[in-house]
Length: 273
Image (cartoon, rainbow, N blue to C red):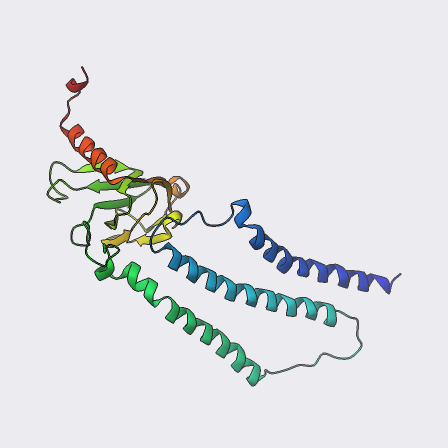
């Protein structure tokens, strides 16, 4: 019985460590059908982001499985009672070269693979281009709106009909942001206090808002609907409630909404009598 206990402990510990990669791979395999994955993509550059994510995920998954397999084997094999002394090693230069070279090659693959997507999303000369590559209605110089992040809300400011953000016809909307569908939308992102992060999962869009900086951001939503907007950067005690919605409307509906908001600026309530 005494000799059986070390063997039983060895089996239990090995199975516990084996459960980590098995459960990890299993949960990833069933994540999509249970709604644990990303929501449906509804932006033009979303497929490129998803492709990069999948590539990196497969790299990490293979590494995760292999390293855990080696760990489980080592626990089982070297967990056996033995009388011989441990062999101390000061390193293996060939092995060190391999595990330095392989990650370096993978990082180079990621670096070159993301260059096109990065340029399309982040370079200002690519922002606001339509499907034909021509400048759309909104550009970094003439954005659709300004979005201010602050503890703990999102506030969108739409310019007057002349594109002026400092006039009397400025429309403001807190937490709810309205944009037209199938239109390249450019906006300026700002922070009034601390670091925030503008994240719309359905657009595959995430951009930090830095205090003292104006950051141009763009997207082109391809499907009407309302989509979650969250802050993805811990910004204080109320971070959990800093959530909003991006409402994607048909262009005529968006223009009607914007005209109605501008008209309401001059209303004194007598129109409803």
